[in-house]
Image 1 (cartoon, rainbow, N blue to C red):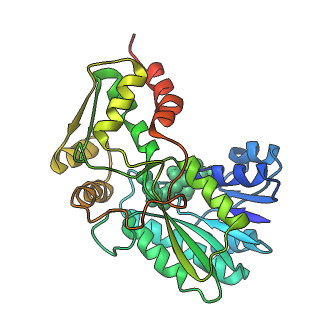
Image 2 (image 1 turned 120 degrees about the vertical axis):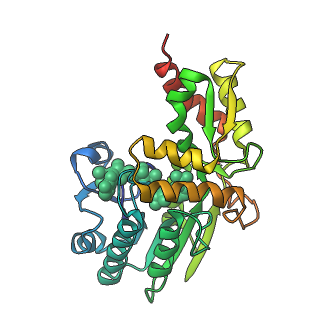
Image 3 (image 1 turned 60 degrees about the vertical axis):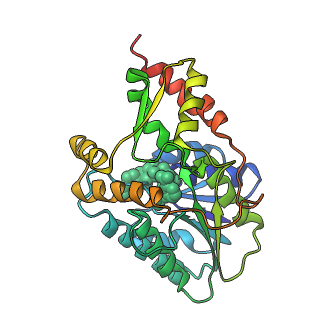
Length: 301
Ligand SMILES: NC(=O)c1ccc[n+]([C@@H]2O[C@H](COP(=O)([O-])OP(=O)(O)OC[C@H]3O[C@@H](n4cnc5c(N)ncnc54)[C@H](OP(=O)(O)O)[C@@H]3O)[C@@H](O)[C@H]2O)c1
């Protein structure tokens, strides 16, 4: 039996679905059983636990052959100290692993997590890796995922209204765009069949590297608009825009640091691109299946 934390989130749900489809027993953990009803309908055992409640998590982990450990959500826009939230969840997950006696963990981390500083929210994932990897007798595989394709969905409304996508990244900089469903599926695969020992790191770099300029041209083609542009905004403009949307100073600072870290290559992939570090979904397929329908729904006409 495998325990999936964050089962209502994007990667967690994909991990649970992958394992259930392959016939494995799954315990899906989230804050609300109601929001996990679809996984229950597919055969998952559903347990409610808040990720900061280590006693509740410990109960959910008992008897598992392996767990998927993830700090969710992706971020909390108005949080005054998101790093402290990440540390609280990381401590809770680590205590639950220690006390439940679980010996196999697949943890979600990020490209750039090697660095303790200068990577925005990825610093919290670095600390998560350090903390959980220090538990004796546990084999932990860290999936250091690339840049989520789903981040592009934040731009749907501006894209529909102005045929423009603005972000702080250099237009031609290759990014390891990966979908959350591929990350979750890999987590499930590794839990079921993985052979790692001790602490190992595996980057998930997506199907191929894609620049923002290329991503925008894929969008333009998919939605049939020739006049689509990518605009690199300065970090100061990006920060001000986040603040104007109600994002806390702490989270806006972190997000701007992500832009700086990626443009300066402080955050970069470090493992060779191989079958193991690549995942199947192309940017074209993601845009066709996920971005384009939302774009069409958001068009003013
Ligand atoms: N964005 C990127 O490019 C990128 C790249 C690499 C790694 N990552 C990492 O990926 C992780 C996110 O994974 P994901 O995309 O699978 O997560 P996600 O989909 O963002 O998780 C969403 C779930 O989190 C839960 N949630 C929402 N607000 C919460 C709160 N205040 N407290 C506790 N739980 C809350 C909700 O489930 P319930 O309410 O049902 O509990 C919700 O369904 C993060 O650690 C992020 O750093 C991101």
